[in-house]
View 1 (cartoon, rainbow over the protein chains, first blue to last red):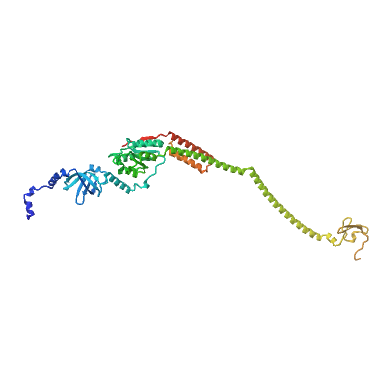
View 2: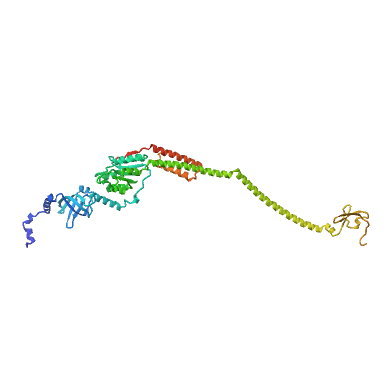
Length: 413
Length: 61
């Protein structure tokens, strides 16, 4: 049509023009509530997820050729049991409506379910992967259980059989302990917050805690896969033993707990020593005490008899004998010294004696001279010493000749 | 006086046995240690005999 714009504006159409709101309202009145667009189930892939603080959830649902904005109001979004993530295949149930502010058709989702995995499994995987990524499942985080717990915390439902099972085992195995029950909801909407709160209240009051719940369906046990429960276990100051459901049931709580027990009863056994074993321990200590005491007595007796041995009279006599022997040796040595001295003296004496002999008049006599003496012993060394007729003694080598002076002759006259 | 915990009593008993095993105690000390040990054994046994599980309850919020 070749008519200029000018003519359209100047035509009576200006007065009849719809406002945008009117048009969108008209569109909305047709789309909203249309049977073909109400309570539809759509299959598609999630994209462009946005979860503002308002609690609403926005995403797009798409396939190879088209896409549609989706919105979830707060109540519906809070009921999601998994995290909406881009790329997952979902079934969305809801109603198509027009969002006036954008003039856009959108799907108001009442429920979203993942295809293939199932919502529970997907949520499980998501929480598991996230916590695993934070290292909360690592073996180094696992704390050892106390050997002799003084206070044992029990987080469970007061209505459940798990509590009675745990208390029965604890009472039988280790009645020395004190149990502090922190009751909580174990299933349903409020269970995760209730469990986390019950755990937090126990903090600082116990040496170890058991988180227990009896068996049930995956849905029944679902609270134990909740991230809030997992984080409460992680921040609990002492070891936590998880015992949720039966042996085949594995929950996120089991991954973050310090120890996983197959059942609540097993958890009670894990956290306590058997009183029979404790008795045995005490008995062993008693036996050891006796043995060590006997050992100590034997050792002291051995020392005593060793000392006695050294004090024995025979031992003293021996030492006297030793002393005496040493004395004898000394004495012998002394004797020999004396002897040697004596011999020396003797030898010198002999020498002197021999020299004496050489100078002795006796020796002269021996050479043939004689010594003449008067009766009074005076040696006659000149003729004047005697008168004729005087008795004299003439001494020769081997004796004395007695005689009288016969005559006197003077020499040289 | 606060009562010793069972675990403390047990560790004390263990320590007595250790001290006796080490063998450097005088005879008088050894005898005293032994007697203390035997008293601890008696205490432990008694507490095991008398023990009864105590259950408390934390109220929710």
